[in-house]
Length: 358
Image 1 (cartoon, one colour):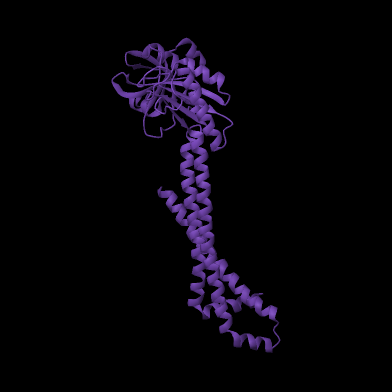
Image 2 (cartoon, one colour):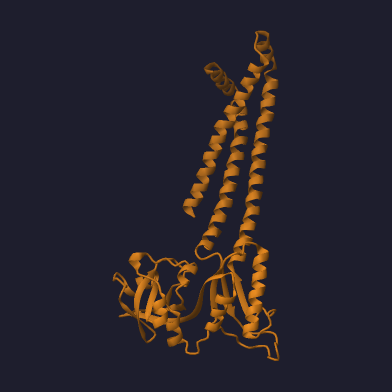
């Protein structure tokens, strides 16, 4: 075996240019395959990370303004939700699981001499799991059912707000002024907002009592189960719109009256798109690799033709066709393995470098 190996090395040294060109075709094919797969998976992981920051089976509904007459009512009516709509979704929509009404406003939040204008969200306890807020045990708690029932003046702050208002102080248990009302800080959300904003969260019942005496609001968010295909999600959206149209007296075909964002539908579509991208990238990479292998085959064919005299001498002194073929194949395997490994290392190195700077 050592003699075969030494003979292969001697042959490759005699034909350095040919060996290098042959190896480069293999290296390039593997390099391109790894880079393409890495880029495709990186793009997919980036998009999936955005989905993982909140429930992928989330439905967001916003009330709007009617653009069509309906049942003798004129267009241009401003629609708003009440808690009855929340109860109806909870009771009548079989696919619904977690649900929260949302009252969104902006208020000045202050602590001693520090203050700022921030988003204030009146939400229900389920909001924690729907939006996947992160509140470690040492950072307190989120709003609970008792807060809702008692209309407690408690508040959960995003970490960024706490850093601005409290500097190096411990916020938990302290009181902040929201507008003109004092709230006790019971928790800190350490999850970074996707769009860089900062919000504070109070019980929905408290928000209704203090900031929204009309008890009407624009947004409802809930999660669903059992919708796995695009067709199922489309049917669900249509049935939800029909139900809300009947309850709120608007034409279900009026797209301006009710806005529905179905994250599950978007997720299913995204998975489908990335499946196609991954397949396409894999095919391109494999074809590039095959082109490299064909290049190796052609160059080895030239090598065999150049060594016709040598092969004849080997046969004359008793070498079998198998032993001659064995040398040629071992040369191919040696070149493919060494340069393939180099291409793999370069491909992995480039993807890791891109990952480091991204």
